[in-house]
Length: 82
Image (cartoon, rainbow, N blue to C red):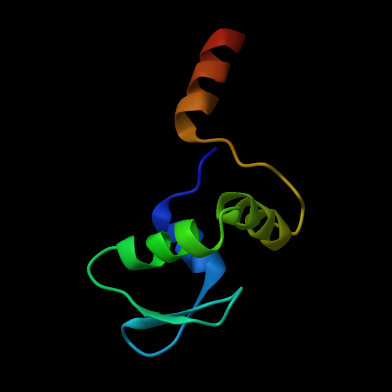
């Protein structure tokens, strides 16, 4: 399951002031506008493996190590099981 832009940024950045975020990997500070474009552009340019890092960080925060399944996949599985 792919992480949303918001989830990736929440995992790989620390919130500074109201509109600034600090990269957890290199400590550079970036300003967040209406979306996450600035933050994601930094990750794409400076940290090419950011998607893997975000998945690893999400797994580390999941204390039981469960993989969560999205609602659509769960519904399809239940339909097939029925």
